[in-house]
Amino acid sequence: MSSPLSARERFIAFRRSLPRTPRLHHLRIKARGLDFAVFTTPEVHGAPPLVCVNGGLLFSHKLLWPALSPLAERRQLIFYDQRGRGESSAPPGEKAARIEHDAGDLGALRTALGYRRWDVLGHSWGGGIAVLGTEQDREGVRRLVLVNSVGPRSESWLPQLHDAAVARLAAAQRAVLQHIDPVTLLTGDPAAQSAYSRAMYPAWFADPEMAQLFVPPRSESRTGAAIASRLRRDGYDWSTLVRAVQVEALVLHGADDLLPPSVARELVALLPKARLSIIPNAGHMPFWEAPEAFFGQVEQFLGGA
Image 1 (tube, rainbow, N blue to C red):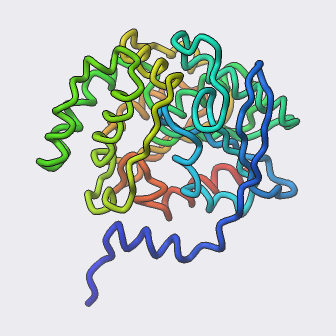
Image 2: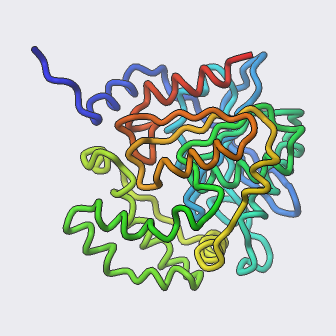
C-alpha cells in the first residue's frame, strides 16, 4: 500500500496537470493621477473578469502570479501593482500613504479599464484592500473572495503575530527573526520592513517542506513601508465599513495559518452575505498547500448563479 503524497508532491502534481500558463498582457493605466502597471490574461466571453489584489503591502502583483493562473481558464484575470509598488508610480508625499488610498484605487482602476462590473479577490493584506475597496465601489463589484485575509480589527490578530511566528520557526529561522526588533517596523523604514517580511516568510506555511519551495519576496517600497508602519503603529477597526459590504462573499482561510482562522470567522460575522470555508492542512497560501480544495471552491463560488 503506497503512502499518501506529501503537500509538496500534491502541489507539484497539481501544477503539472494544468494547461500552459497564459502570458500576461502589460498595460499602463492612469487613475487618480498615478500611472498603474496592470497585467491581464486573455478575455473569456460571458464571464465577469476577476481582479486579484495581492497582500504583503510592500510587493508587486507577482505574489499572486502565476499562483492563481488556474483561475484564468474560465475568466479573465486582472492583476496590478499597487501605488508605489512594483512598476506603478508612487504618490506624492509617500510618508502620508494609507491603506485607504489603495482601497480607493480599486474602483478607479475598474472605471479606467472600462469594466462595468467585476469580481474581486484579495489575499492577506490584499483582503483588507479588497473589502475596503468593495465598500467604496459597491455597484461595481459582483462577488468578493477573501483568501486568508487580515481581520476587520487589528487588535484581534496583529499584536500576537510576532510571537506566533517565533514559536513556529525552526531554530535557525527563529534566530533571524528574533534579531530584528519589531519596534523598527513602526518607523516606516523600507529595508527593515523588507528584512522582517523575509524572516517571517517560512512561518506562513503549514508544512515546512513547502516553505523550501518558494523564495521569500524582496521589495523596499517606501509607499508600502509607510502604510505598513502606520497600520502597526495606529491599528485599525474597519467593522462598520465591513458591515456595509452587501455583495456575495466567500471567505477562505487555511486552518493552520499563522493568521488565526478566528479572524475569518470575525469577517463572516460582519459581512451580511458571506460564507466561510476553513481549508484543512493549509497555511497562509492555500492555493499552494491545498490547491484542489482552494481552486475548486473559488470556481464553484464565482461560477454560481
